[in-house]
Amino acid sequence: NAGVTQTPKFQVLKTGQSMTLQCAQDMNHEYMSWYRQDPGMGLRLIHYSVGAGITDQGEVPNGYNVSRSTTEDFPLRLLSAAPSQTSVYFCASSYAAGTGETQYFGPGTRLLVL
Amino acid sequence: GNSVTQMEGPVTLSEEAFLTINCTYTATGYPSLFWYVQYPGEGLQLLLKATKADDKGSNKGFEATYRKETTSFHLEKGSVQVSDSAVYFCALSDHGNYQLIWGAGTKLIIKP
Image 1 (spheres, rainbow over the protein chains, first blue to last red):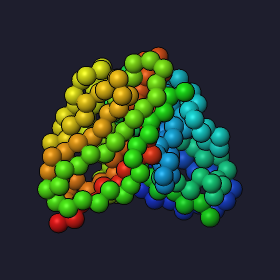
Image 2 (cartoon, rainbow over the protein chains, first blue to last red):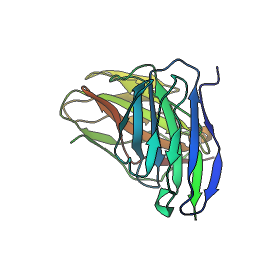
Image 3 (cartoon, one colour):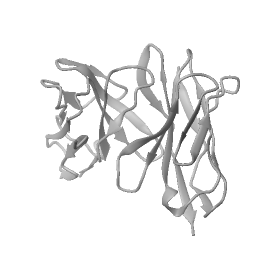
Image 4 (cartoon, rainbow over the protein chains, first blue to last red):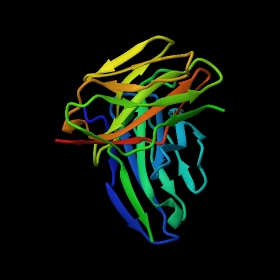
């Protein structure tokens, strides 16, 4: 059981470039989400999904797209990278979308936009 | 709206000291409360949780009690170790809105 995996671990982009951050889980979890972590700000929710084919926006969705074609995968796309998107990105999953559910996190992707 | 407030860090303690990290919350309903821990270079992992008032969550020597009357969920440990050095996040999820609301995190440094 690999849990939640994320690739790449580290990425450097130039302003205006696009890229996809990959996230996969092998626990058959219905709920998946993307967060960004910035110093002193905790985690902020970007997008989430309650099942294959269903996605919705979180607190800070601008500049990011997601899709959920399978239960296992939940990629995050940066459309046109900006320096403000320099951050650490975490993918998380839980068995279901419900109060009290434990979320399982991937190891993170550190993104630097120049 | 819902919010979580944690004490600012870093918190620096000597090994075997008693630890308290304060967490208070604002919520419209009856939330579930969580403590997550992030060790250096890793993702977050659940440390403990409580889903209703007066519940006590515990794990790895850490404890936190859900206090509805003071809207608090303070994290405690009787004797910390160097290996407890990490960032600790308090979070809540409210009924009807299961997304987690996070505190800013408290960095804990334990010196031998």
